Image 1 (cartoon, helix red, strand yellow):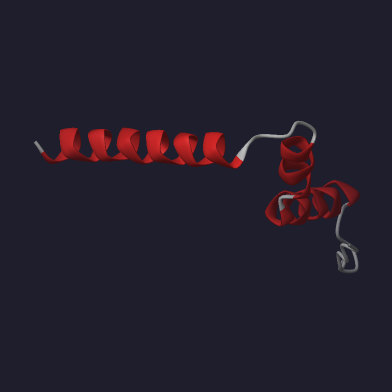
Image 2 (cartoon, one colour):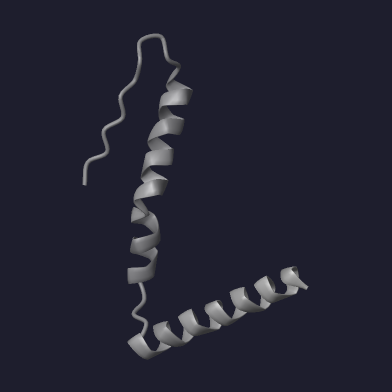
Length: 65
């Protein structure tokens, strides 16, 4: 994957690096790499998704009260 960051004339290098870093974060490459470092069974993945959904619902219901 290639990230192309256009730098305008007169733009500081710090701002260009910030743009590049933001693009990199949006592609989620690093997150995917970290997830693939350790294998997680499909059943465990699904269980984690269900737990997260329950947690979100609990918070949502508390805000509505």
